[in-house]
Amino acid sequence: MGTRKIGTAMWMGAASIVGLAIVATVYALGAPTHRLGMALRATARWSFLWFCLATYGGALAALCGSRFQALARRGRDFGLAFAAAQSLHIGLVVWLFYSAPNAIPPMLYLIVFFIGVFWVYVLAAFSLSSTLSTWLGARQWQIVRKLGVEYLAFAFAFDFAARTFGGNLANALHYSPLLAAAVGGPLLRIAAAIKRRTGAANTAGLIPN
Image 1 (cartoon, rainbow, N blue to C red):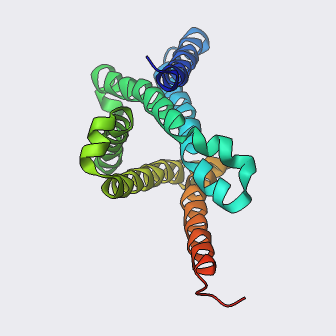
Image 2 (image 1 turned 180 degrees about the vertical axis):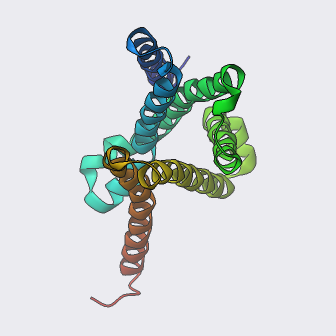
C-alpha cells in the first residue's frame, strides 16, 4: 500500500473511531429516551466538520494564498474521512427507522437526505478509484464533483435552516453558526472561481492594468 493510501486510511480511520467514541459517550451518559437523537445530531455535526475541511481548502487557498495550501492538498483525504464519518450517521438513521418508526422525519427531509447519501458514496467511490475517475475523464469528474459537493452543502444548509428557524431560540442560537458555515462554503467557492477567472484574464492580457 502506497504512502498516500496509508495516509488516506488513517484519516478515514480517525474519523470513524472518533465518531464511534462520540456515539459511545452519548449512549453512556445520555438519557435513554434521548440517546438516539443526541447521537444523530452529534454525528451529523462531526461529519459536517470533515465536509468543511474537505471543501473549503481550495477556495481559501485561491482567495487567501499559500497559508491554506496544506488544507487544499488534503481535500481528497478529508473528503473520504467525511464519507467515513457520515456512514456512521447514516447507520444511525437506519437504526432510527427500525427502532423508532414514529420518529421518522417528514418525506421532504428524507428525500433531501437520501439524495445526499447517494452523492456521498458517488464522490467517495470516484475518489477511491483512479480507474473510475480516469474512465469518466478529468473534466467530467470535476463537473460531477462540483454537483455533488454543492448538493451536499445544500443538504446541510437545508437541515440547519429547518432547525434554526423551526425551533426555539436556543435552537436558533445553536444552529445559526452551522447554517452560516453551510451557506458560506458555496459563497467562498463562487468568490474563488471569480478570482481565478480574473487572474487568468489578467495573465492573458485581456484586462488592462
